[in-house]
Length: 481
Image: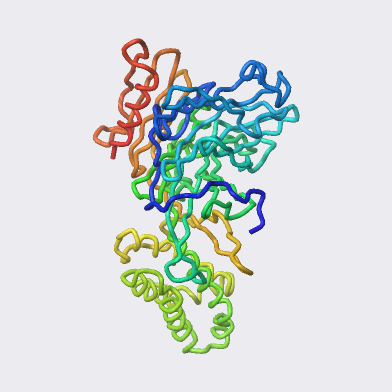
């Protein structure tokens, strides 16, 4: 595979799918609007933290770059008692590096560092690097528009295993998905960006990065009837990402200026086998000449092509569990019979194959999670492209399923730096803002007349540290329904 990074992870041990296998001293995945990152706990009692500053201040005896360069220093406090300092690669340039966040992935025993950097030309980037305890990966850039100002990035990690159709029977690969979220200033105001980074068995699945604007996925009902009132500017630039209720899912929370809402989205990664099957069926339908047959008033065309599609799914998708595959194949056949004529009129065979592809991913993923296939509407969500993995002379697409989990009016906040904390199912949340030594917060309250509780305060001091306060708030948020 051609790539800027041939080994992003060291060898990883086989593990079952897990989300956020990190134990942190603060928030599980990242720092909370601090100059230095929050500390995170690695293996064997190692504690990691990143500091920002000039190279001369952070590395008085160093010679890797100029003393005035703004850099990031990783401090590793070993369980043995020793302290080691490392220059974060990619931060030694002339750029100003800031807003670092850390995530320790217990499944692969790697530390991830994500941060933003800017230079005198007002170019702003989001950078990502990983550390195995002694060596760094190559730093990669995950940002989209480098000409816009960006907020502090946030990161979560999920894992699963999959088998490709061309692979040897029983041979599986490990997929690590890095979910990177930030906000940036656009011509439409502050918007939230999502960049999935897919790593397969230690190597990047693709050398290009697809960035998705999440504000575009609020529900149509909300877009048509938005909440009234303005959202605090600082809340718009404080998106968050945390573990979802499923092992392959994360929840992203953010405030949307256009609708006045606090939105929670669930992003999950359907089985790669489903994505591969969906692409294969799309190719099959593209070669069917279905729309041309319908134009020629072939009365049997629709039924025969739909039945052929059902058989194709059963044959090609043999690696998908039978309890999912058979009803999925029948469901896709029904959808084709019901919608193919309309789709042909709207966009020809491309519309037909695209609709079938999306339907397989959305409905098949729900069925694999145990949901009843009945009632799993094809429009219940969106499919995003995460990466296209080169396999032989072809590509396998790694997809993400996006669903809106909750939308409520954004809370009114006071002065201070805000943080959004989300629940695993994406329905509960806490919004906290920090001003000096006082943390003020509100939480979702479905039992009251409003969407949010009255405000409460926590006082940081000798009896309650900042880390302890945020840890309690995160635990509280994750218990909300």
